[in-house]
Image (tube, rainbow, N blue to C red):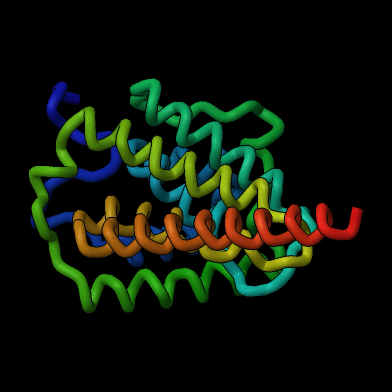
Length: 211
Protein backbone atom coordinates (compact mmCIF):
# COMPACT_ATOMS: atom_id res chain seq x y z
CA UNK A 1 0.00 0.00 0.00
CA UNK A 2 1.46 3.39 -0.97
CA UNK A 3 2.18 5.99 1.67
CA UNK A 4 -0.58 8.36 0.56
CA UNK A 5 -3.31 5.73 0.69
CA UNK A 6 -5.77 5.95 3.55
CA UNK A 7 -6.15 3.15 6.07
CA UNK A 8 -9.90 3.39 5.86
CA UNK A 9 -11.06 3.68 2.28
CA UNK A 10 -9.94 3.31 -1.30
CA UNK A 11 -10.98 5.78 -3.97
CA UNK A 12 -12.24 3.19 -6.41
CA UNK A 13 -15.40 4.17 -8.34
CA UNK A 14 -16.15 0.50 -9.00
CA UNK A 15 -15.92 -0.66 -5.41
CA UNK A 16 -18.67 -2.67 -3.76
CA UNK A 17 -21.04 -0.66 -1.58
CA UNK A 18 -20.35 -0.82 2.15
CA UNK A 19 -23.79 -2.25 2.89
CA UNK A 20 -23.23 -5.01 0.32
CA UNK A 21 -19.88 -5.86 1.91
CA UNK A 22 -21.54 -6.09 5.32
CA UNK A 23 -24.23 -8.34 3.86
CA UNK A 24 -21.61 -10.59 2.28
CA UNK A 25 -19.90 -10.91 5.65
CA UNK A 26 -23.20 -11.77 7.36
CA UNK A 27 -24.00 -14.38 4.70
CA UNK A 28 -20.54 -15.97 4.77
CA UNK A 29 -19.84 -19.34 6.35
CA UNK A 30 -17.29 -17.81 8.74
CA UNK A 31 -18.12 -17.27 12.38
CA UNK A 32 -19.40 -13.75 13.01
CA UNK A 33 -16.70 -12.65 15.42
CA UNK A 34 -14.75 -9.42 15.74
CA UNK A 35 -11.76 -11.29 14.35
CA UNK A 36 -13.61 -12.40 11.23
CA UNK A 37 -14.86 -8.83 10.75
CA UNK A 38 -11.27 -7.55 10.83
CA UNK A 39 -10.16 -10.24 8.37
CA UNK A 40 -13.04 -9.52 5.98
CA UNK A 41 -12.67 -5.75 5.82
CA UNK A 42 -8.89 -5.46 6.16
CA UNK A 43 -7.90 -1.75 6.04
CA UNK A 44 -11.54 -0.66 6.41
CA UNK A 45 -11.90 -2.63 9.63
CA UNK A 46 -10.71 0.34 11.74
CA UNK A 47 -13.83 2.33 10.91
CA UNK A 48 -16.10 -0.73 10.62
CA UNK A 49 -15.19 -1.85 14.15
CA UNK A 50 -15.86 1.60 15.56
CA UNK A 51 -19.28 1.63 13.89
CA UNK A 52 -20.26 -1.81 15.22
CA UNK A 53 -18.80 -1.35 18.71
CA UNK A 54 -20.10 2.16 19.40
CA UNK A 55 -23.52 1.66 17.81
CA UNK A 56 -24.55 -0.43 20.83
CA UNK A 57 -23.97 2.27 23.50
CA UNK A 58 -25.44 4.74 20.97
CA UNK A 59 -28.85 3.13 21.48
CA UNK A 60 -31.06 5.55 23.47
CA UNK A 61 -31.44 3.21 26.43
CA UNK A 62 -29.56 2.99 29.76
CA UNK A 63 -26.86 0.33 29.53
CA UNK A 64 -25.74 0.22 33.22
CA UNK A 65 -22.12 0.13 32.08
CA UNK A 66 -22.35 -3.27 30.35
CA UNK A 67 -21.10 -1.73 27.09
CA UNK A 68 -17.77 -0.66 28.61
CA UNK A 69 -16.04 -3.65 27.04
CA UNK A 70 -17.09 -2.40 23.57
CA UNK A 71 -15.83 1.07 24.40
CA UNK A 72 -12.49 -0.30 25.62
CA UNK A 73 -12.03 -2.22 22.36
CA UNK A 74 -13.02 0.90 20.43
CA UNK A 75 -10.43 2.92 22.37
CA UNK A 76 -7.74 0.41 21.43
CA UNK A 77 -8.72 0.68 17.74
CA UNK A 78 -8.62 4.50 17.94
CA UNK A 79 -5.18 4.42 19.58
CA UNK A 80 -3.90 2.15 16.82
CA UNK A 81 -5.13 4.67 14.25
CA UNK A 82 -3.33 7.48 16.07
CA UNK A 83 -0.16 5.37 16.22
CA UNK A 84 -0.32 4.81 12.46
CA UNK A 85 -0.90 1.05 12.41
CA UNK A 86 -1.86 -0.26 9.00
CA UNK A 87 -3.75 -3.30 10.33
CA UNK A 88 -6.06 -3.73 13.31
CA UNK A 89 -4.60 -5.76 16.16
CA UNK A 90 -6.87 -7.24 18.82
CA UNK A 91 -6.02 -9.61 21.68
CA UNK A 92 -7.06 -13.19 20.90
CA UNK A 93 -9.78 -13.08 23.55
CA UNK A 94 -11.39 -10.01 21.97
CA UNK A 95 -11.11 -11.43 18.45
CA UNK A 96 -13.33 -14.31 19.62
CA UNK A 97 -16.18 -12.04 20.75
CA UNK A 98 -19.18 -13.15 18.73
CA UNK A 99 -21.85 -11.14 16.98
CA UNK A 100 -23.86 -14.21 16.01
CA UNK A 101 -26.65 -14.13 18.60
CA UNK A 102 -30.23 -13.34 17.60
CA UNK A 103 -30.09 -9.98 19.36
CA UNK A 104 -26.79 -9.02 17.72
CA UNK A 105 -28.10 -10.24 14.37
CA UNK A 106 -31.13 -7.96 14.57
CA UNK A 107 -28.90 -5.11 15.68
CA UNK A 108 -26.56 -5.52 12.70
CA UNK A 109 -29.49 -5.75 10.29
CA UNK A 110 -30.84 -2.45 11.61
CA UNK A 111 -27.38 -0.97 11.37
CA UNK A 112 -27.28 -2.03 7.72
CA UNK A 113 -30.54 -0.17 7.13
CA UNK A 114 -28.88 2.99 8.43
CA UNK A 115 -25.84 2.40 6.22
CA UNK A 116 -28.04 1.89 3.14
CA UNK A 117 -29.96 5.08 3.93
CA UNK A 118 -26.73 7.04 4.20
CA UNK A 119 -25.43 5.52 0.97
CA UNK A 120 -28.54 6.76 -0.83
CA UNK A 121 -28.36 10.29 0.57
CA UNK A 122 -24.63 10.93 0.75
CA UNK A 123 -21.95 11.39 -1.86
CA UNK A 124 -18.16 11.72 -1.75
CA UNK A 125 -17.20 15.23 -0.66
CA UNK A 126 -13.61 16.52 -0.34
CA UNK A 127 -12.31 13.03 -1.05
CA UNK A 128 -8.70 14.25 -0.92
CA UNK A 129 -9.13 14.76 2.83
CA UNK A 130 -9.52 11.02 3.37
CA UNK A 131 -6.30 9.97 1.66
CA UNK A 132 -3.69 11.21 4.11
CA UNK A 133 -1.97 9.76 7.11
CA UNK A 134 -2.79 12.89 9.11
CA UNK A 135 -6.54 12.54 8.50
CA UNK A 136 -6.48 8.95 9.79
CA UNK A 137 -4.68 10.06 12.96
CA UNK A 138 -7.15 12.93 13.37
CA UNK A 139 -10.00 10.45 13.00
CA UNK A 140 -8.45 8.36 15.77
CA UNK A 141 -8.19 11.37 18.09
CA UNK A 142 -11.80 12.45 17.50
CA UNK A 143 -13.04 8.89 17.95
CA UNK A 144 -11.05 8.51 21.17
CA UNK A 145 -12.59 11.70 22.62
CA UNK A 146 -16.10 10.43 21.84
CA UNK A 147 -15.34 6.99 23.27
CA UNK A 148 -13.96 8.56 26.46
CA UNK A 149 -17.16 10.59 26.78
CA UNK A 150 -19.27 7.46 26.40
CA UNK A 151 -17.13 5.46 28.83
CA UNK A 152 -17.22 8.13 31.55
CA UNK A 153 -20.98 8.71 31.33
CA UNK A 154 -22.72 7.74 34.60
CA UNK A 155 -24.70 4.46 34.29
CA UNK A 156 -28.48 4.57 33.80
CA UNK A 157 -28.33 8.19 32.56
CA UNK A 158 -28.25 7.60 28.81
CA UNK A 159 -25.54 10.26 28.54
CA UNK A 160 -23.35 7.84 26.59
CA UNK A 161 -25.77 7.99 23.65
CA UNK A 162 -24.66 11.19 21.92
CA UNK A 163 -20.87 10.65 22.21
CA UNK A 164 -21.30 7.09 20.91
CA UNK A 165 -23.57 8.23 18.09
CA UNK A 166 -20.97 10.85 17.21
CA UNK A 167 -18.31 8.16 16.80
CA UNK A 168 -20.67 6.06 14.66
CA UNK A 169 -21.45 9.00 12.35
CA UNK A 170 -17.79 10.00 12.22
CA UNK A 171 -16.76 6.47 11.24
CA UNK A 172 -19.47 6.17 8.57
CA UNK A 173 -18.43 9.55 7.20
CA UNK A 174 -14.87 8.27 6.73
CA UNK A 175 -16.09 5.05 5.14
CA UNK A 176 -18.36 6.93 2.73
CA UNK A 177 -15.82 9.74 2.21
CA UNK A 178 -18.37 12.43 3.03
CA UNK A 179 -17.14 15.38 5.12
CA UNK A 180 -20.72 16.42 5.90
CA UNK A 181 -21.32 13.17 7.77
CA UNK A 182 -17.93 13.55 9.46
CA UNK A 183 -18.95 17.07 10.53
CA UNK A 184 -22.27 15.79 11.86
CA UNK A 185 -20.43 13.18 13.89
CA UNK A 186 -18.12 15.81 15.36
CA UNK A 187 -21.09 18.00 16.34
CA UNK A 188 -22.95 15.09 17.95
CA UNK A 189 -19.87 14.06 19.90
CA UNK A 190 -19.14 17.61 21.05
CA UNK A 191 -22.73 18.16 22.17
CA UNK A 192 -22.72 14.86 24.03
CA UNK A 193 -19.48 15.61 25.89
CA UNK A 194 -20.66 19.16 26.68
CA UNK A 195 -23.94 17.78 28.03
CA UNK A 196 -22.04 15.36 30.26
CA UNK A 197 -19.88 18.17 31.63
CA UNK A 198 -22.92 20.36 32.24
CA UNK A 199 -24.88 17.64 34.02
CA UNK A 200 -21.80 16.58 35.98
CA UNK A 201 -21.09 20.13 37.09
CA UNK A 202 -24.70 20.61 38.16
CA UNK A 203 -24.59 17.36 40.12
CA UNK A 204 -21.39 18.37 41.91
CA UNK A 205 -22.86 21.75 42.80
CA UNK A 206 -26.06 20.10 44.04
CA UNK A 207 -24.12 17.71 46.27
CA UNK A 208 -21.94 20.53 47.56
CA UNK A 209 -24.99 22.55 48.55
CA UNK A 210 -26.24 19.63 50.64
CA UNK A 211 -22.99 19.19 52.55
